[in-house]
Amino acid sequence: MRASTAPGSGATAAPGSGATATPNPGGSTAPVPGSVPAPTPPPDAPGVTNVVPPIPASGQCRAGQTYSISVTSGPTDITPAGSVEGFTIFEPSTICAGHTYPLVLNGPGFGGDRTSAAGSFPQFTTNGYGVMSMDEAGEGGDGGKIRVMDPDQEGVMLLAAMNWAQAKLAWLAYGPTNDGADPHEPIMGSDGGSYGGMYQFMLVNIDKRHRIRAMAPDITPHDLNYALFPGGVIKSDWDLLLTGDGNANGFENGHPLNFDQFVTNSFVTDLAQDAEDPNFHDFMAYHSADYFCNGTSVATNGGAGTAPWLPPATAPPKINALISIGVRDTLFDFNNGYLNYKCLQQGGGDVRLISHQSGHNSGSGPNDWVSLVPDPYLPYYPADDSTDNRCGKLAQPTAELAFFNQYLKGQAGAASIVPTGPCISFELGDGITMPQLPTYTSGPAETPFSVGSVSLVSGGSPDELPTAVTLLTAPAAGLVVAGIPHIVMDVAPTLGVSYGTPIIYVGYGVKHASNPTLWDLVDNQVQPLRGIGHYDEDITGGGVRLLPGDQLGILFFGENTQFATNGSVSAPTPTVEPLTVTGTMYLPVMPNIAANI
Image (cartoon, rainbow, N blue to C red; front, side):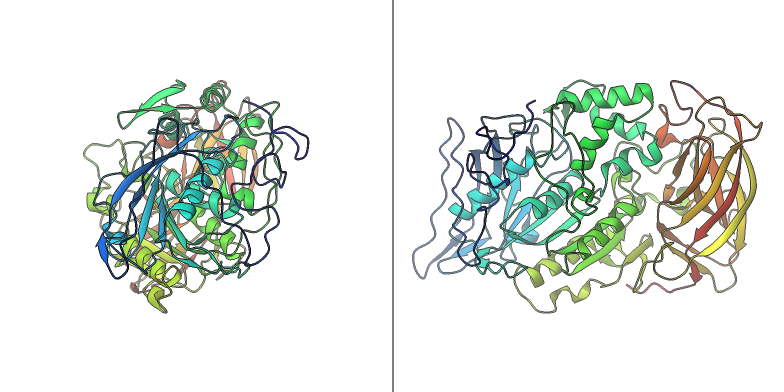
């Protein structure tokens, strides 16, 4: 891995730096409104001759075709000679001479290949959109290495794909950018979930041409440090699943994954020392949407001798966005979606937030099922819920197409089926919308509940058996909890002295009137509290509908399966000790609201 070089130094310059040593793959250095020259298309990859079907003759139409393209992108932070970028073009189902069509970018989830089978994406192609499904660095047939969506590598590679599309697709629609700075740029949208959502935030922030007019990221992180190391506690089960055992050439879906060794080494080291290395913290921060919202600088991008090419930002460009997130997602939780929503709103575009039941909780990794057999929680979270992508009755794909129709095709009012206020999914088919999401610092006031004095043992209780404090019993009309809770709490050693770093977990739950012996952890979400001290922070949001007689309670756990490898006992210095917790939880409790979507 090489260190970045200063613009104008005579060495290879960073893309987007404004230096002349390397053409800027995101656009010209100082664009003049209305006169930005078209980008130079990247060359065909070695040994490849890319062929693009011609536009039909005047007055004629033809069936859309599907074809794969392979190009060489410009220099990146780890491949100075450039990398191979592969993608597949799905033309609209019918191409007519004289007609133009928007292009939707698509990226797979982590470990996945681009989609290349003809007939894919019918929801777009049959509605007059083209689609470009792109491989990501280190996966499928792409060059580069897996660096967790690095702007200095994946950014360069994916901008090359966008430049190729602009230069080569004669049917591509053009129009003014969202900010009005240029009246003639390709009209593009972006689609995908998880890793396939991360690329969208990256491109929106680094593409100087601002070609993406509308985006639809699903189950996507805002801050990778928060997602993978919440409260400084390594989410070990997920982290191990994502990186394997430290082998830089693992496999996923039957094909090789080419990890940058820095990534796998860092995870292995962090697990061993039970703490995130500062260099890895910088690396993850630079690769997060949050980097382009909070203005916080980082020093490195992969260890000593490296530095990020791009400066931090305090607000994104103007973008229209439909953000969707899984309330039960234990990898990228609801707060990630909410923070992305608040971030993009700063740009002044139309930004909307919907939630659903599905997400990373539905996969083969740490999921929604506890270890008890038979599972007593099944009645409260039936199997059909795990794949449900609806908020109430509104399905995410339906909402996405409507949103794109308005902002990529100019169909006035098309997105009216999508609520303008946040939508909270409670369960299959049950959701509510609100003008503003309740949080501790904004929105409708939250209700404080004292926890009194709670005794528990860190690392010493099964995660299915919480220490609970009952707060209230729902009246005959029922209640709703919807928003982001907050805690102001103190954790102290019961014996007066702590001999390590204890870790406990806090959430909230329901004891259903139909089963008064079981506490049901709301949305399966917990917040780790690492060490002795004072805590004043949000915990994972979402919501639940309380039926008459249901009890609401604060739940504390001494361990949790999402952090099983080392988060329960703070390896390498296991700390199993009695603790006392005091303080207050603030919950967004409100009168019952009927399903309204």
